[in-house]
Image (cartoon, one colour):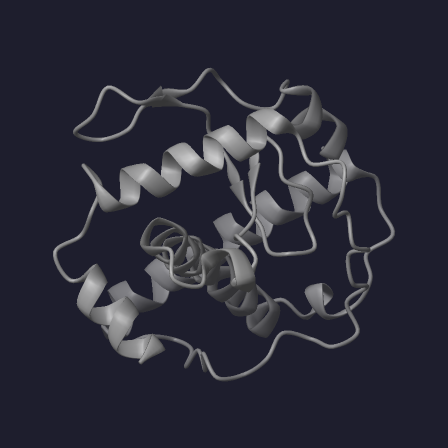
Length: 176
């Protein structure tokens, strides 16, 4: 999958961002461990973002996007314990495993909600992900120049056409 991401084969062509004519590619949100690439976004360094509104807003919005996938994965971990252990299977099989557990989760949720109109699990957001997951090795360095330009374009979009009416209050209240 990594080879497909970095070769540009995994994604369809980009689309215009909402309310703008900015044509940008689909991206995966990552953290500092990832290599910046046109299809993989990582935050600006804290030093680079300090005092720069565009970069600070970008880091905040990237962090919020990452939180969604982290919470979804945490939910799958709580329900399907297989995700608490290293999984030694082929990537194609792993893709199918993820799809199956997502479908099974939705099936169980829908069946239970129809019956009792109550959530069938209590997902505790404060629980950490398992600590026995093999960490990604730092893939920093060798950043792609196009990745820098695309990240800058997203950063500009988030303070222009894509600005949220509450983001400045929220972001700069937190940093004060």
